[in-house]
Length: 63
Image (cartoon, rainbow, N blue to C red; front, side, top):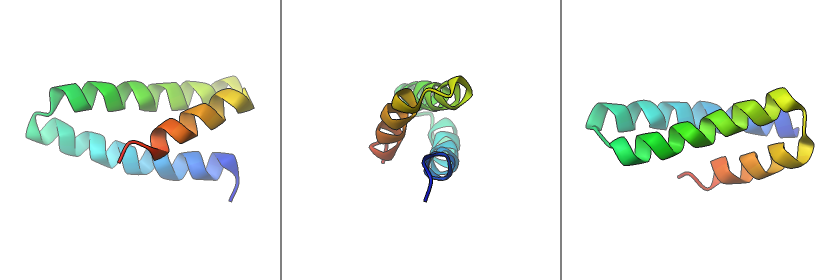
């Protein structure tokens, strides 16, 4: 699996989790996860592989 494919998989999982936090009113968790998702999206847009690896690891640990 490529880095981009792995990131997209984690982003999809975390976006679903984000919706769950929003529904239950988990504002703190929602805010943190939203920032992690934004950083991952920004890292992909930047094309910086090191930044993407860090963002991927951060998303992976968001369970």
